[in-house]
Amino acid sequence: MQQKTTSGNNVIWNFFTPSSSVVSQYYSSNNTQNTPKCTKEEIDSFLAQSITSLTFQEREAAYEELHGIVSANEETIERISQWLRSFETYLNTVHTVGSAYEVAEAMDRSYVTAQEFRMMFLRADRYNIEKAVHRMIKFMEIKKTLFGVGKLVQTITLQDLNDDDIACLRNGSVQIAPVQDIAGRQILVGIPCLRQYKSMESELRARYYVIMTLVEREETQIHGAIGIWYAVAPSNSPATEQKYGSNSGLLWTLPIHWAAAHFCCDSFLAYVFSSAGILLSNAAHRIRVHYGDHSKCHRQLLTFGIPREGIPLNDKMEALLEAHEQWFESRKEQELIMVATNEARAQSPFSIQVRPEDVLFGRGRGVHEHQGNVKLRYLIASHQDAYNKAPITERTEIALGIVGQIKKRGGRFLKNEAEDWIEASTKESRAKITMAFRSKRKTKG
Image 1 (tube, rainbow, N blue to C red):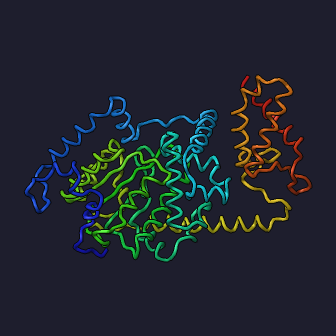
Image 2: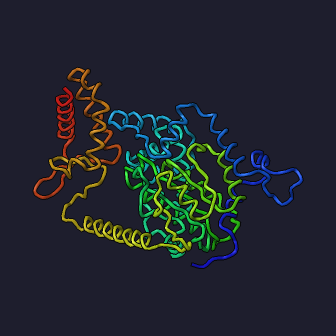
Image 3: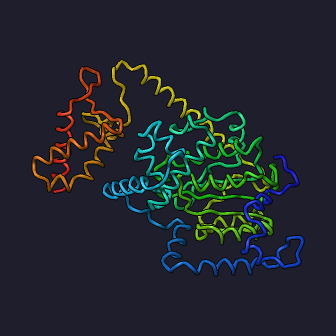
């Protein structure tokens, strides 16, 4: 592995400047070399004192999440329905005129209003409605900047990355670790010594792709992931990068919850700056800095349940990329299968092609788990109490209202006849919903 004299730890300088009031406490007034006066013990003590601003319950929750012993917030149909309604209500109060989100909504409203899409942001911000809405709006801006307007309402695949992006992706500077932490959470590792890119945009697009593959798993959305920046080696990349702050924005804007973040470095100066950065961060209670050589940082990570295999570097600081290459090949294969499936659907003899928003008549696991049918069950649950209390005449109106909501979102009610999908009548659709209300009421009783 090629190494240069420029230290990967120097990139931290771009995040925290000596002009910060917090950082300045670490320097003497006549120190022109920017050499820290304090010791590691003094910094650790200062960091520990800063955490005391948290309540006892907050400190306990932070400790549990760091060590992977925290339980996830239970998601029930009723809670999800309430969160999504509150999400839409607050979104309507936010000024989005001219934003990337407004453009995306005009292009394909069903994409940005889909439950699975919005739940990613709600889970990332631990179901805080306002934070989740603003994260989604910022996310659309970043996606537009990195991939253009045309990709706003599409899932980014390897086909959307150019050759330089792919090179950044395959060099392993950011990768999903081949192992999980002791709590079974996925680990994203950033390794500055592997960074090689022609433009910062290519690296950011590659990182976007890797992180978004993490949140494909609902389990990761719910329990969060672990982030590690392992700056314990000389770097192949430029020491200063004007756009490097964009990387920080990317990490905290994509729809993923970082249950814990670890920064490892072998430079005391980097340790000082990163420690100061913790104090300026809103997520200070979930961030830890580890100072020492390769072996010492490994031992410190072990105390947080992160296996040695979580850092794909051997004792000689040489990259171990076999697992990362297998991941890359697996992604290519998955996306080829997806393309072939879509092409097969396009060539289907059915006159009507089933869309995710459609509600299907019939039985079986495929129908039950179809996205449109799942959404219908959430709508039924959210209207169940009102339906139970309403007189018979009003129940018909409630059922017709749900039919209208499904159709407004681009969905249809489809039934299979003579090996073909045909659209059901409004009367048949209303009858299906009425039956669903009755079945749920009986089950609840």
